[in-house]
Length: 267
Image (cartoon, rainbow, N blue to C red):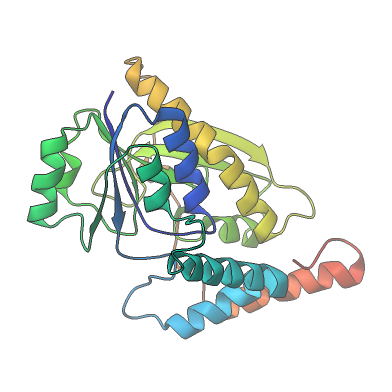
């Protein structure tokens, strides 16, 4: 089975996830595309500064600083030729996998390039909304990892919303990409409980522990021709967008109250 990966260059979360896929299926991967964009990409109607402030409140001081320092260190090391390069491009190249870049995976020149590789399945972890022509290239479809139990919690920053809404169970869904938002059939789901003292950072860590396992299981399932998929009905769906500063503040105050009352942790 020929696999192509389209991803963003996110050193904190996505990088290790993609590396696990490459290590397990490197003989099947025909290419990796690094697409423009990052986790801070939001709509033009939203302020990036306000979003960063919201993330600071959600992650807490230590979590936010770890994220910032890890991202900064990654970018610096990429520019230092005498230091071992930890970038996704360098890692893939060492496995003998061709790497390319695109400003937009829906662009005609990129579509022609991918068609030449003739992948059976595409894994998409970019920030782009994928259009119909790209979706139609791989005969087995395009897969996405989503950090929630679809059809609940479609959309952005799902671990935050799981905690904000006080849900007791969450997980990872590997689903087909279609022209909706996280609305394709679910290939594999991994469920786990939300701990009593769960923080955003610990929940994200759990998501990314299960994510590569779920994606590899989904690839095996498609390769075996198993079409026993899970429905993802719109009628049961909930959708989340980027949290407001007020929602992030409310969440942080709850965390602080849990610490003061001895009922939880703040970060």
